[in-house]
Length: 573
Image (cartoon, rainbow, N blue to C red; front, side):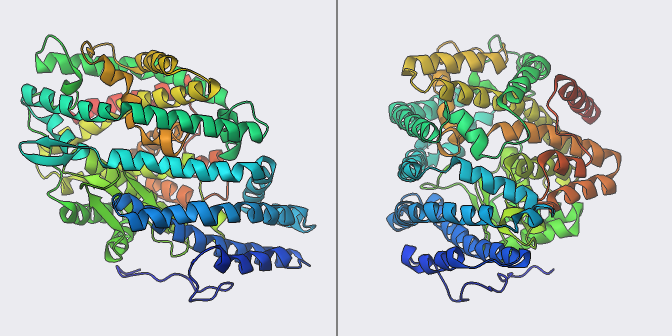
């Protein structure tokens, strides 16, 4: 494979020149699938391949509408294109997709396919989709999608003025690493005040989304949206009770380590009271680590870093760069956050992020790059369903890459002390990530178990849960309102509900992958790649097993993995 633009595979069902212009352009192909006579298992396989091709084309069209909308939130043309799909195409697809599912489920040859690897997982999901489909939910999903878009519009417009310059909140937050405490405090207040300007609008938006989602759940015969989502997301391998066990394990095993680190931070900073604006600065008073100069520098160094681990990994990013599938730098009018968006037909994904120059930005491209590699590794799988991995597997790909790539971080940090510092900060960040994941996930469980809660109850519940998983050192006196609304910065709550516990599960898996890699680089990397190549043709525990790790979030396993992290931290010094 060379670093050049890749072409999509030849189509066998749709014309090569076909583009999605509206529902009327798509309808004939759905009808062909609906009316196709299936006389053998091979017929059924061919039918699934044709359906996969059609759905890949539609998925990629929607992907570009979403990508463009988030890249340029102020562009009305892009916003309208996205809205058009959500309002006029998606609602038409939903009922006919259900009919196609039922056609497949009723086919007498389905049992034969169910015995083959990959098809068994796909058919399990297909039957689940039939079980939860309700026609009355179609219009609700349309309304939910349009409401979710408002979060990007609100947050994408948030800027602050610093030293006469208008900065995005991501750009301004770099100043929270300043060694000047007065400057940090000033920036913290500016960012917080800007967020709080929209607290009511964001509260009202969230309340509306909760109500709409609860109606979807009730329509589908579920007591609450949490239970509906566990079914909808295909969580066959664990239950809400397992999530609560994860919360408890993190509280018992990780939070004490977080407390120790925070106490040490306070001691090194030599301050009487540790405030929220003291959390990002280097505790030894060193200037912030600068991992790269700009988007071009970040791209080149990331490709070099990936190539050092394995030439194939670098090639994946090189292809994306050649195809213009990277938009990395923060700018006004760009939605917050970062993502790797799979492009189902061409198989070359798109990475979007808001980089400034920080270590965290560098880790983000490692993370999204892990997702991208996953897309390349599954590119040749026969069906789109085989490539559509559950989040627990997708995030294993990305979070493992964060840790594996540390061996090549000298591409970014040529100074040995800075390199050690970068690794230390990242490992310490894991100790913050796991409690935050537990916080957000626990909060979501409460939210949807109590869909009729008041705003005051929401605030109280948030603080109770946040306190459970936070260090006891940081002083929030005077910043209570900022703490009350910290959850509003988590876009997953608005856009992808219940997609968060996966980060915690995958973080544990990633530590285990990294431990294997440290013991034997070649064997550890091969296990990681073997797992990713499976796509979603095996269950989650089986995919993890292919990487020679366990899908386990018990107290004992978390304790074992955290002990390893603790030893690695000691080894850096």
